[in-house]
Length: 313
Ligand SMILES: OC[C@H]1O[C@H](O)[C@H](O)[C@@H]1O
Image 1 (cartoon, helix red, strand yellow):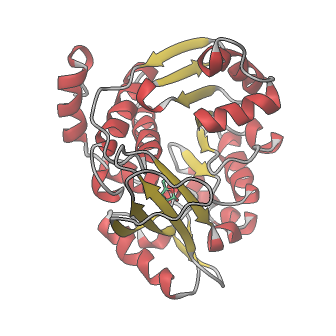
Image 2 (image 1 turned 90 degrees about the vertical axis):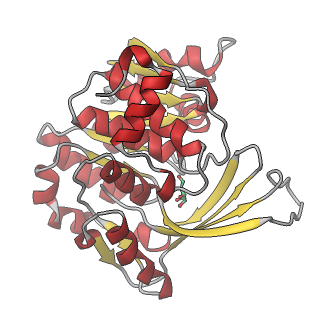
């Protein structure tokens, strides 16, 4: 796992603020976060051994990292201090569970190719290498090239969105996008979605990505499920399980952890998609991120109820 770590503050509001509007929050919660840390914690909760690089700064917020990693059962040797500020995220969650957030990456952007190279032995002993875009392009490109060159699958969630470079796409096995990210990428690589919308355009986007090296495209549609396109052409649709959402923050991270956990356990994409959807669904029923990450027993119980034909054993 490459990055990221942030101190995350979440304001609970009646509804998300409009541009120019000031709202009073009914509550605020601070917890360690960052998409890299969240996915690492989610994988660990699912019983997967995790190692990697977690960048922090040298300010007072850096002290949050060690207890956070300990609490989630992650090795504290993952922590890499850099001079400057630790990343900070600020989010809003409305009473309908919807969220929006901004992240200042701070030290996460200081993770370098050299640091990644110094961890090459760890990369080469991994079952999968994962990254998101709360870190810079260089460490992602370096780690993915080392992994892919050795036949190790890689998973990228380019969030917050920027266009992945050709170097990164060429070394990406699995690309996980939400709707906003998929629309942005579609516009750049395959033209705007037609009348069938993003779901129908997923195959064209997957083909364009496949030509650049990406083997599997996953687009999440929140409460409308996910579409998985294998090899640029084979489509699997994963339905969303019906739950009452109270807080969607971290749902994408829980989904990614579930998908990766299924993949490294050697499960078929159908089963990995179900585990991912169950993790995302369980997460949105709970406030906060870290306490919402499900364990295998919770995923199994959930699937026995919501997908009895194919429960996780
Ligand atoms: O994906 C949600 C996460 O993104 C931001 O990094 C926040 O830390 C939050 O936990």
